[in-house]
Structure formats: structure tokens, C-alpha cells
Amino acid sequence: MALLEINEVTKSFGGFNALYRVSFAVEERRIHAVIGPNGAGKTTLFNCVTGMLDNEGGTIKFEGHVLNGMKPHKRTELGIGRTFQNIRLFGSMTVLENVMLGRHCRTNAGILKSFLRPPFCELAEERATREAALELLEFMELAEKLHLRASALPYGQQRRLEIARALATKPKLLLLDEPAAGMNQNEIIDLDRHIKEVCDRGITVVLIEHHMSLVMEISDIVTVLNFGEKIAEGKPSEIRENRQVIEAYLGEEE
Amino acid sequence: MSTSMRMLSLFIAVTVVFGAYYLIANLFFRTDAYIESILIFAAINIIVSLSFYLPFSAGLLSLAQAGFMGVGAYMSASITTLWKFHFTVGPLDLTFFIALLAGGILAAIVGVLTAFPALRIRGVYLLLMTLAISEIIRVFFLNFEYTGGASGLGGIPPLTTIWNVYVALVLVVLFFVRVTKSRMGRAFESMKEDQDAAEVMGVDLTRHKVVAFAIGAFLAGISGGLYAHYALYIDSTNFGVFRSIEILIFTLLGGYEIYAGPIYGGFYLTFLPEWLRIIQDWRIIIFGGLLIVMMILRPAGLISKEMMSLRYWRSTLANLWKPRVEA
Image 1 (spheres, rainbow over the protein chains, first blue to last red):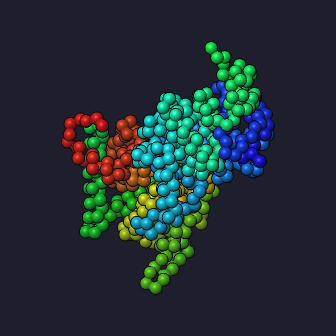
Image 2 (cartoon, rainbow over the protein chains, first blue to last red):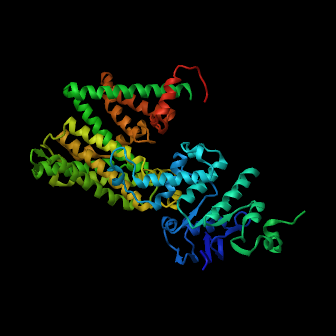
Image 3 (tube, chains in turn red, yellow):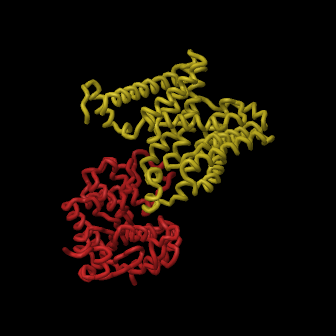
């Protein structure tokens, strides 16, 4: 059984079909890329999977659970994490707090428990949260920036922080929405390595990306969307040769 | 850091030190009834400002705090005045404690009822809705004959003393100190920053909004109880829209990034009109002018979040007299 099954999913905005009967499956422990021109419905698809939007037709299944109508935070609890195309960090919170927030759904200390804890003692859960967050920041190479406001980070590091925050939710499936946007070549090489390391941790990655070199290099399978419909799916080498994909998106080689 | 920022920091440092000194000196060594009454009102205003700040820190702008305050005031005053309730454990008289708690809990229940319609509303619409709820509560008490209706509720026993007000205040502040840096505090802040992103990161918006409203209303109810047992007479006009706006101003001027803001604002804005009494009728104009100047120069309020660290004060005070260095 596939980890994520998207079956005939349709979503329209005022008569315009952002997604029309899109179906594909994401197998466990793969890096699955979703590509397509701007406006093809890639981000809408992510929004439907995470519950920020409700799909109108079709079903989305995650580990056999039907997600339709489920609240976003419940989906996060099931193990779906994501990053955003237009970075959506909590700017006034520190780098560390951003990642610690990601652990929210894996912890349960309420207000009273935090208020009534003994003086000068940290809750064991809070310490565990901090340690897990530190480990992830180490992993994403942000350990020196712990106490900076997230909004004070340079762009590339904000992107990495988003990944660290999403990883803190302990996802089984990580959706990355254009993680390489606006990055320079060196940063993309780092990102490439980070995504592979995430995959090595047993996390399945779905990736929306426009940098074809990155997509072709790391992904196991590629799905191509155009005007809300799936036009192709296959290994990177097959996609590169696909006539339809070349016409719609990749363009002819000069 | 700019020179004006350094001067502002110095101003805040001086006023905080002066305020703390003034408070302690009057708490322990003087019994001037006039100053004592301002100090008590200052503490009540701080508690109710913090009650506004709590839902605000989760991105929920509530102008219903005056209404919740009224619920707490009427409930606790009913217990001590209408029902003549007494409860003692050995030498301890817990009557007032229980009355306050009951007022807070009833206010929290009303707060939860408010939260449910508020779940689907954001921004300025939420503000209007909470304003309407505040008015509903006020008009309810205006017409509720059991608690005096339009003629108000008088003869409330003077149970509020400067000591129990400040004990309550210390507990409330301690609550904020501890909760801000906790799991729930982070969740509230993330909701204020970006509600949708917070939800995708696993924050249950419904639950957290209800909790924020309930605790905010609870604190407002406590402050209402303290108010009722100091003013000794309450009527519905005490808890109208104007009071809600006053609470909002305390927080806006003091700073809404961190709980220290409403504390600072609540304290000094209770004193300011008293100090401006010398110039009589003009004081409200000066007060209003100050607000306008503040909104232009420092829209996030006087106290900002970075001021909460010792490091900030060390570097600010160390560099106070250096010529302009842009860091």
C-alpha cells in the first residue's frame, strides 16, 4: 500500500479547475517530485493534502486513513509535515522557538501544568522538546542562530528553518514546496544533501520544484501537472524524454 | 541602536525603577489613603489589561473584557452582599477568595460561550463581535433587577485591601512569566503570527482559542471582583464600552509584544491622569495627545520584546553616552 494515495482529486476556484481528477500514489521512502508550469495546481495539491483547502471531488488517503474533511492539525498528528512556498515562519519568535513549536502536537503539557511546575524546574517534556529542536537545528546547520528572531535570518536559512520546523512535527511524509526557490547554486547543493539525509531518516519526501537539475538528480519518481491535470509520471529519465512534458514545461533543448 | 531608542530605553528603565521604589515604599512605609487607592486601582487595571493581553497574544482581539469584568464583579458581589455567604477554615476567612474564584469561573464560562462564535471570525469583525457581547452583558445587568438593575448594587463589604490585590497581581504576573515560555505560550504566539501556518504545524486552533478566551475572561472576572469590593458600589456603566477601550489603551501604550507591556501601561496610565490633575480640564486632552504621538512614534507600544533580556539592558546602558554608532 502506498503511503499517500491521491485519487481523482478535484478543486476549483470559481469555475476554474485548479486540480482536475488528479490521481497518483506516493510510495514509502521515496523522493517524489511534482513539477509543472506556474498555475498548474501544485501548491493547491499540497493545500488539499494538508487540509488548508478541502478538495471537492476524490479522496486523499494517508496510510489508509481518508483525509477528506479532517482538520489540518489532525493530519499533522498523523504524520504529514510541510513547508511553504512563500516562507511562513513565525517571525517574532526565535529560531529555537520556531522549531520547538513544531513539537506541539507530539507533546501535551497544558497551561496549568506549566504554571504549577515547581520553581526553577523545567518540565521534563520541555527539556526533551528543546533537545529535539536543538538536534534538528544542528542537522539543518542552524545551531549558531538559536536565539535570533526568525525574521532576522537570511533567506536561504529561513528556508532551512522551515524544513527543521516541519521535521520537528515528526512527519512520515514531508511536503516541500519549492525549497530551492531563490537559492544560489551552493545553497542548492546543500539542500540536495539535506533532502537526501531526510529521506535516509525514513521520511518520504514530496517535492515541488522548478530547478530541474535538482529534481532530476534526487527524485525517484516525477509527476507532471499542467493546468490542473496530470500529464505524465515516471522516472526522471523518462520524463525528460516525454513529448508532452517538453511541450508544456521543459522546452526544447537548443 | 539609535539615540532616540537609547533615550527611550533610559526613560523606561528610570520609570520602572522609580515605579518599583514608589510601590514598595508605599506598600510598606506609608498609609496615605489617596495614594493607596491609586495603587489598588493600578493593580486592578494591570490584571484586567493582562486579561486582554492573553487572548490578544493568541491573535484574538477582544473588547469584551469589560463585560467579563462585570460578570465577575456582579457574581462575587452577589455572593458577599446578597447571599451574605461566609466561609472560614480555622482562623482563615476564605469568603472573599471563594467569591473572587466564583466570579472568575462564571466569567470564564461566559468567555467560553463567547469563544464559540468567535472561532470563525477574524480581525476587525472579531473586534466588533466582542464589542457587541460586552454591550449585551452591560445591558443585561442594567435590566437585571436581582442585582439592582439600573440603580446598581451597593453596600458591598470592603474586602479588597492593598495586600490581597497585590498578592493576586503577583500570582497573575507569575502565571504570565511561566506560561509565556511554555508549550502553550509558544502556540499562542504562533497563532498571532500566522494562524494557518500554526494549524498546519499541529496547533489545534479551536481548542487554543477557547482556552485563551476562557483564561482571559477568568482574569477579567477576578479583577472585576477586586474592583467591586473596593469601589463598594457597582452599576452597569462601570463595565461599558468605554472601560473596554481603556483596557485596550493600557495595552497599546504599554506594548503588546510581551506581558510586561500591559503591566507598564496599566500602572502608569492609572497614575498619569492623577498627576495631570494639576492642570484640571486639560488633562484628558493631554492624555489623548499622548496617545496620538505614541501611535506615530512607537506603534507597538513602549515595551518591546527584546527589552525582556538582561543583555539588552547591559548593552543599552553601557553605550548610553557613546556618540551615534549604528549597530
